[in-house]
Amino acid sequence: MRFLNDMGPTTDLTYNDVFMVPARSDVTSRFDVDLATPDGVGTTIPIAVANMTAVSGRRMAETIARRGGVACIPQDIPVEVVARAVRQVKDAHPVYETPISVTPDTTVGEALALIPKRTHGAVLVVTDGKPLGVMTERDGTGVDRFAQVHEVMTTDMLSLEAGTGAPAMFDALCRQHVDMAPVVDGDALLGVVTRTGALRSTIYTPALDADGRLLVGAAVGINGDVGGKAAELLQIGADLLVVDTAHGHQDKMLDILPLVRALRDEHASATGRHVPVVAGNVVSAQGTHDLLDAGADIVKVGVGPGAMCTTRMMTGVGRPQFSA
Image 1 (tube, one colour):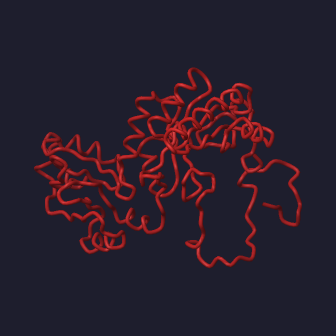
Image 2: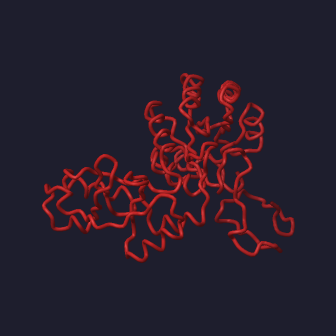
Image 3: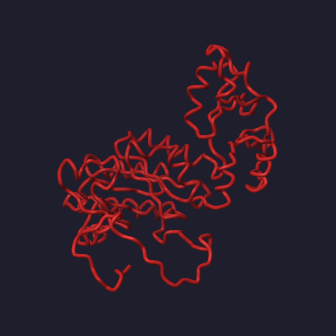
């Protein structure tokens, strides 16, 4: 990166302070641009979801990995919960969305409460892994909330066979004038596909591990039994190990990183699986150099840039993100 006319800024800058100046290029289409990151994570777009409790979780991890990015499960979640989340992400299909499934005797009220948890606006009625019908919010309008979903569900629904290409799925949904359909392998439910999801699947490449499963990271702090937790996160299958604290340029972080890196290297020798170590957060060149020298593969940059973060406002500590 260089500044126009080689005029360096005299003050720190935020993203709102700058523009990118177009230059001569031989790229004719945005689809010809390779956004895959060379950092060993495996993402196909340079987007990582912050390891914040209000931001990152299992559903976010699934969704962003299907589009090529990666999410990190926060450090303040119990390890057994993290293990369950990682397992669910790994079990999720890399293309088909995970539906909300209910049994035929679920009440309409319960089903309506679940529908907003997905953007496709419906729940699937399933017995023994086989889809029997679908219930939308419209199906439950004006119906006794204690009625059961099998009384109002639509049974004449479009089902798509696994292996059908995304363009063919999109065309089938359009022909039937429906927004969502279950994807099945014989009678077994694999997931659901929407028009938007099918379209996006033709544009984005999922971020997958060596076994073709969605990527997901997990975070560990610098207090407590850091080595024990890091070893557990490696064992449960996290693809990214984030050593995280608000002020990453401190002695305790620099003492912890060699331990975490040694555990990662030991795990790699035993399993052949390379897990990048991320550390942060810092806002200076010296902080970045120190974390890299201590064992980090990737450095998280920024103190207080998040929309929900109040660090800068409450403490006056931080740095404009573009300059950081």
